[in-house]
Length: 229
Length: 357
Image 1 (tube, rainbow over the protein chains, first blue to last red):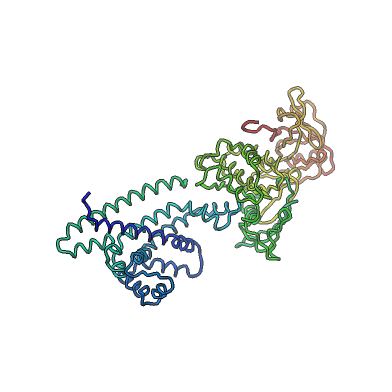
Image 2 (cartoon, rainbow over the protein chains, first blue to last red):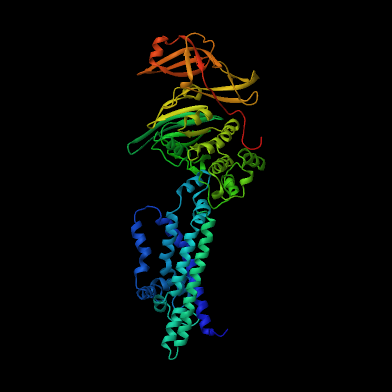
């Protein structure tokens, strides 16, 4: 198949890798945050606001902020490099970090909705049957919130695939390292005679989006049935 | 061994202030109108509610003592609680639901006991099903089995039949009767149905407005209760032989003749409505009623044109509802000897179980 050039395939695979790692890494934190937000405590509104922040922040400004914080000469970035050898800037891991932060609110919102809709009576029943907090979380709460978890993961994944501003600002546009699909489209447009490539990549992005929509609905239907709702 | 409870808790304008004990191997009914505090007591026993003050001792284990700062959380109390709405886990099969508490129990029942419980509740054919494919009655039975298999020290049944229609209720009651007869742990049965309590309970705690208004044996306490159709008597009896198409029922104080009470020797509960008892000063003759018991009147309570007459036949307590006019015409008063003419008798629990025997 000569539809895509090796460079384009590289951008596609890189995009998929960055988006899936971002979703997977953010998920445990999203679950913890959603659990916290599904109950009442002082400072809940503040935490809720912080979680929603990436939704309203300009991505480029956020990317710049990440660059300042995680730059190897900066405070946290320097510390991580010196003590753990972890570098985010100009690496695909940096793109993961930026994508994870930007899609975090999608995951939290979806999981939180599922948690708030849960039947607390089942939790009580599990308690009287001897199940501890962690036991109930793993065996009752999360399995029943599975449709919400999946919905959140899919929305976040789709969002991560489209992330542009934060990535280009924070980790630049390096082929094979940080040049994801949106960045590849942008690069193609900057290149004389690159319109055809840009069109192909855009078409690919649109097909991908439809595939996810279809996959998401199939998975949701299946899990919702299984959860007995 | 027993369960002791003494709690005090105020929520808004409602104050719950109760104290009572329940013996092992018996059913204690918590009976009262809605809002009497029945469910609060169950939640306090289970640990789902933490009373402001109180002490709860289950089978010798202190699970709550606010003075000493002791509060054992629900997951460590070994309480079997059957909720009104069953609360089966929708993402698990019946079998996984049944074994949920069993897996977490420190005293796991062996495979024989699991099989016995499954058979006791007639769940053999339901094991692979999902809860959403069960009928209301089946859900109740699974919830009961799930609670039993956790090997609890005490079983709490919070209106397990309230969400079921009359037919389903009639289907479950025999299972509960059987459970009562074999269980060795205290069972608390919460209900606002007089008939259910009369049929299942050994002891009754009457609740109203967050307080215990009376406490005692089901046979002593229930007669006279009930607004529309008051109960006249609850008796425990043993089925005897059949003569001339009528079966004898022996109870503590005499015998009754009924059409059918089940196999000989079966232990049954007898209910008589307060409106189904007539009072005669002399032994009536030439009457269609089969049951005429010699009684001694112990109390007469007048209430406008109506009157409640309490009588004893041996140790059995009977209450008849008659008119005040009859009371004065027959000169009914304490210590007067009379005859109770019983028009109708309801016999339950004669050993006819659903499913195979």
